[in-house]
Amino acid sequence: MPLDASRRVVASLGVDGPCCGPLRASVLLAALSDLHAVEDPRGSNDGPQIHHLVRGIADYWWSDLVAPDWCAASVSQWIRRGLGLPNWRLTRTKPFAPAVEGHPWGRFLVGVRQIVDWAESVEDEHPGVWLAGPEPGAAFIIASEKDGRVVYEHTGLVLAVHPEDGTVTTIEGNWSSGVRSRTFRASYPRHFIAWWAVL
Image (tube, rainbow, N blue to C red; front, side):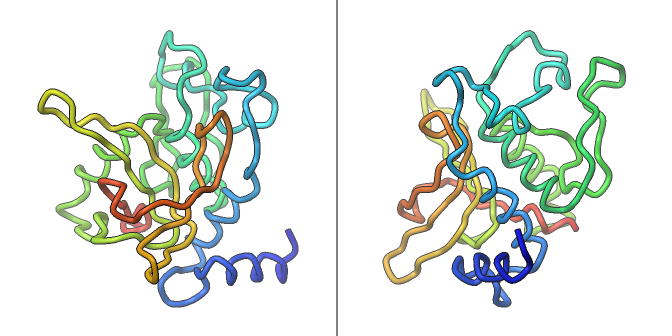
């Protein structure tokens, strides 16, 4: 995308001011490049348009789970691409789950709970990782409680915050079998995570 066009997109999202640095803007632009990509066939958690987001999950984590849910994998990949980092080595060679230097959480995190665990692991040194409210570029975490425990269900990125009506606009993978943008109440997610807090 040409630089001027990128700036127009970022400005239209409200992330060109002091609330959001260039790294966050770059990550959001990486995510927007996948907007409307879909699974093929629908419900397969894979397909030509999203393969770059989901490829190698099973091999990376030495898992027998084929074509797993991919919302968290999308967030991992969009951050990696937005920061201009190389892809993870996704072959079954030990040590498995190799890190990419410069990525906030290093690993190719593919589970919502993994992102929460990462935030908990760095919160003492980087208390700003937990946001009091939504900010453009933040990872949102949707969760529910079942039988007295928290079930982490879904994640994506905040594109824009709308304080006038208390909503946020997001971009997220694995929603309605594709990469989608939607708007919902800012009170809906359980957490907003500032992945950039450790950079």
